Length: 177
Image (cartoon, rainbow, N blue to C red; front, top):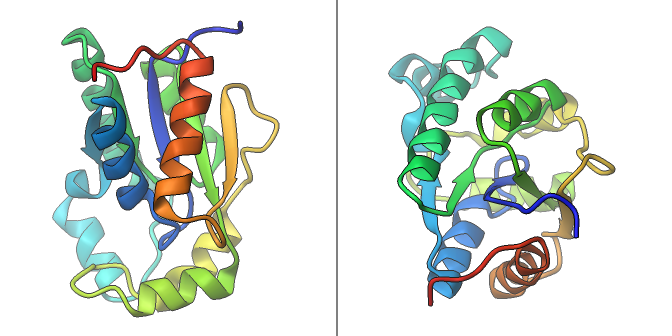
């Protein structure tokens, strides 16, 4: 077995199902959900709500906070599951530095499916107009260590959570229930 996976990041573009899969996974195995969007500073939310994509500088402080949350959860003996777009390799590497043994689950989907889901999602700050910028920014994590890529265009939330759970167990996770 390779390095055990101590924590997970559920990643991908907006609309891929990060939050839903995280909730289903944590209900399945007792891990601790950390909703990355809830840590965005107000300026980031205002920028995205106005239809402007975030840049590296906008994301830097947010990623630092997420690193702190991963460290806190691991120190407390939890098995954190962080939802974070983690679109660029350098963002993922920053998170990996905070949590050795961090695994990534890439919820891959088509641009069309992402746009459709986001346009039908009530009450979220991310407008469908930013989907193209997310795909333009995305650097696929396929081939990176401790990374699982799943088809979020076709598989249900329950299937994605079950596949993730199975993969995590193969990488050293012991569920709490």
